[in-house]
Length: 615
Image (cartoon, rainbow, N blue to C red; front, side, top):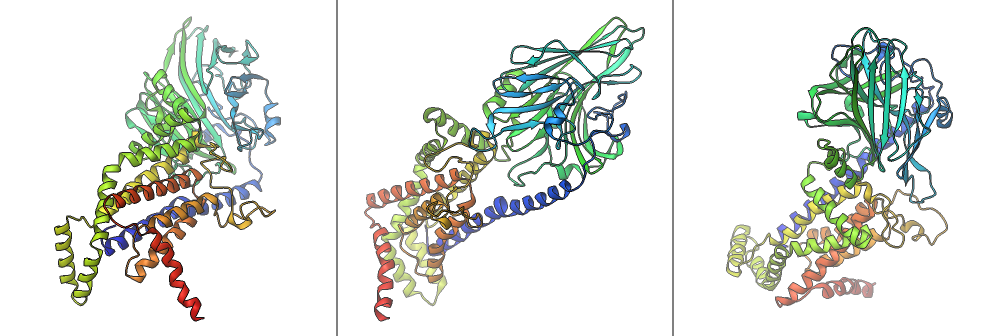
């Protein structure tokens, strides 16, 4: 890889990249996770207050005129004792949700979508493990729900969290809408038509008929509310928290901690940020693999907001939208249609919603990161071959192979330059000896030799430099896309997005005890380390003992560093190393240069032989 100094610089740089990456993606997030766990445990020991809050403690969905009647949207009037999820569900009469992807219910008291489980996703790789629960009602330990309706003044009682709706059916299923009705007794009759597709999208049409004697002005709103700060992954490569695209303001991402630093919004007890008079987009709350988002009409201006307030000991996070006022004359009607996405962030599903429903930049609910121009094509390639072979692990191997072919011209030039370097190695050693005391003349003579033999001394760095962005793009895809979650390979790898579950500490499962996870060193990281070691032994050892030690220990360092990375990433690295060895061997033989692999391997033992004989 060029001259010895270049070798050393690249080796140190690559080692630092991995060490810093390990600290950035693994070590620091683990510390943050431990801190969050401690806070969660502390909060669990305290008696949480109910979601019931005074009206002045909760902001309107937007700061525009025409504030809502009490209780405010997103709250529940009265006091609720925190209890089990099942008991909280039993507090209200309900209509079931039953689709191929979702199960749950809608509370007739409040009309909220507050009970959603994902049928096709489980907590572990075992299909018999509990389903993922996304939304939960008020009164449970961690309320998380969506709410829709109208706000306004001088319109009599408007539907809120205490309103008891009447349903025209018992089940909401794909293709079979459900209608809820409520008469406020002051001249306004409300209807809510709920529909859901076969995946994760709800469509909510709120209608109001004015049977009174005076006109009223109402503002449609929707919101997603989450009680209690959830345990987050804590990885800087992943955004979790408030997310939205707000018209021309573009993508907005606020972590839970960031939201707490915003100025007061609406009242002193609430902090947040609002964007007025925007058109198109969505607002919501996202986890690593799941999201709940409120989606307004894409052609009508609205105000979007992210807010945080404290209710006793509980933090309440809310993403809301509110449309412009609608005047409803006596004898007239008005309606507003909004949507709710509540489900898994499947790439193809999200993209289909963006295209078919015209939701502005809905694909950004998935955190592709700044280097989306690399991560998106990487996912597309993996997904394409997955549909051909039915295994994401095989897809990683195939994509790596084609990447090797894509960069073959660069790699060929690199290895050819390395082969030429080996061919003139004796002359290089002669120059070093001849000008041992004059480094300037030594470098000048080296440059003349490179020029004469048409050698690029830094050409050998390109294969490594090309591999780094591919490495991090694959890491991002493995980490953020739900398609990789619980995706099996072969044998013991049942989740490519998780580290290799085997451990050297219990001899990879041969010993009858569970291995501690403080040394995450499984079979695939060891295979990766061996392939990296073989690749380095393809080249002659540097004459400098310090450099030689660096190259000797690099495979060991990488083996331990990658032990806690996703198995799919380690498989990629090992396969890439093997392809590099084959490629380099072929090019060296083609250029008539001796392959140093066998000599270097046997030389390791020959060096130890005299010491053993002497002893």
